[in-house]
Image 1 (cartoon, rainbow, N blue to C red):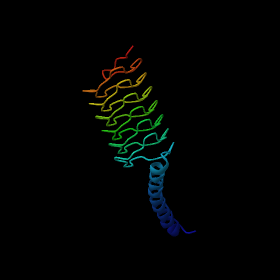
Image 2: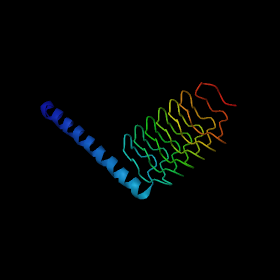
Image 3: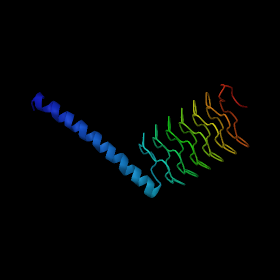
Length: 170
């Protein structure tokens, strides 16, 4: 095949692949809303604002930069999920499993994380202002540079957690 023909064909293939990826995200989004199961799915930058995903299985899902504002994720499995820079403000994560999840610079303002498992979660730079963390498990979580103004932490397990000031909680 001549190089003149090959280059446009490669460009066309690349453009078609990108469009297919968008369709794939929409299919995964529809699947998630219907079945509440999408472990390991690639849903970066997806908008699920206000969706009811109570008890959903999103273990290991890639949700970086996603908008999950006001989503109901109580008792959901988000263990090992990637949620860096995600918008989770006003989200219900009561009883959710976020163990080992990446939540760097995530917006969790006014989120309900009561009873949530955040053990070994990476929350560096996350904004947890006004959030409810009562009885949450934050054992060995990294909260360095996280904002906790007005957060409620009654009964929370902070053993081994790295606090916003960089100190290790004993």
